[in-house]
Amino acid sequence: MEGSKYRRVVLKLSGEAFGGTAGAGIVPEVIVSAAEQIKEVRALGVDVAVVVGGGNIWRGASGSLKGMDQATADYMGMLATCINSLALQDALEKLGVDTRVQTAIEMRAVAEPYIRRRAIHHLEKGRVVIFAAGTGNPYFSTDTAAALRAAEIGAEVVLKATKEEGVYDSDPRKNPKAVLYDSVTYLDVLNKGLKVMDSTAASLCMDNHIPIVVFNLNRPGNIKRVIMGESVGTYVGGEK
Image 1 (cartoon, one colour):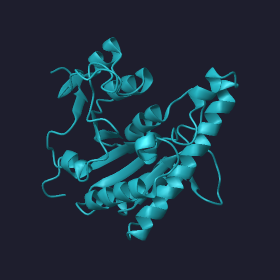
Image 2 (tube, rainbow, N blue to C red):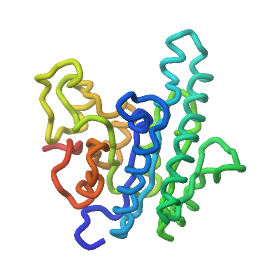
Image 3 (tube, rainbow, N blue to C red):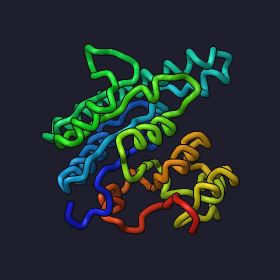
Image 4 (cartoon, helix red, strand yellow):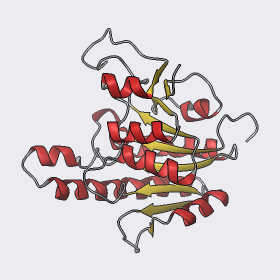
């Protein structure tokens, strides 16, 4: 871990990122690029756990807005994260990275059930652990799952990889003059409603003193740059 800023991290990959520019479906090149970056970080000796979203396949919130029972829609979203997790596992193992998928919804034919102590054991053995199916509960996002798993395994930071450069004061896709923040506090995120993580995830990170770094996944090498402590994206932490 010589030169790296962090010893153990949780990497949150949005499902939309897996869908490439369209944000839908699975684009193999994007997953391979993410896997290559994870391998690069793992080679530094950093423990890497990954939480994957499912928005490229199904978004529970969209289903509930169209009249579907929200719990049912959320469970469907959890299953979508499992598909993405298996795709990432396949890409990692093709690169020679030892990987385990643990899911909060039991499906023993394809993944281990989530067990905290076993997850930590895998990390200590140098394996990348992919956490699927969110928290296993409806009404909670995969952002919240990332914050929860980070607290449970003793991660030092949550790395949120997105399609944007970081956190802006407004939507950069709608406002070309949107300002990119270098750093913000947890309270800024909560009080200003900044698009970092939902309020439950941000509060959980704040309560457990886990910083969040939001950055662009589509720039090769960005994950390593964050791990090495370079100024990439937006840092979310305590008071400035």
